Length: 191
Image (cartoon, rainbow, N blue to C red; front, top):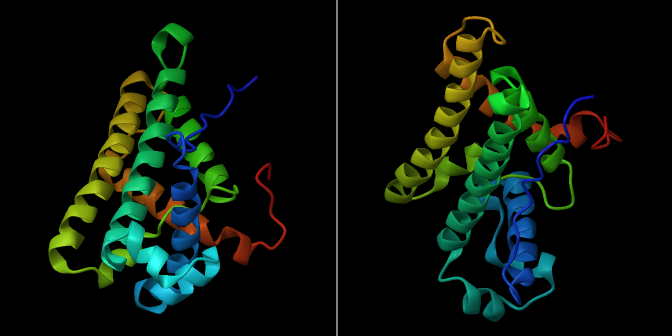
């Protein structure tokens, strides 16, 4: 029996549940319409809050997008670390178990009520100084995947490939999974 998938869902601090709702709505709009197409008015309307309420919680749209990216990085990191724990040698795990558990959990997350993750394409419209910081966040996630792949190559569970190229392919697949329901209408988390 395959092990249960890790649950990378963020845990909100007491009284901060609204923040997760805000980030999910903003992420969905930004993924659908792009950074420039998702206005503060649209995000506020999706949450049924005033524009003033938006600015009460966020300095500007860039600050909100940075928070959406940070949430994406945190979810990815949680899935990866949980998958590594599942694949620990003491549990007779291997690199393939870690890679497949992390990617399956993240695709499932993309289709959950808490998903999707913010698409990497949103970086292109950010101011350059913010873009570099967000690019570094994506690179850290890729490097963790590359490490899992390298571990799998070492233990024989993964064919010898370039770990960084394979990690970028995984990230691209996860990024595309945000649109999975548009490509395969009716697809469920279990599918």
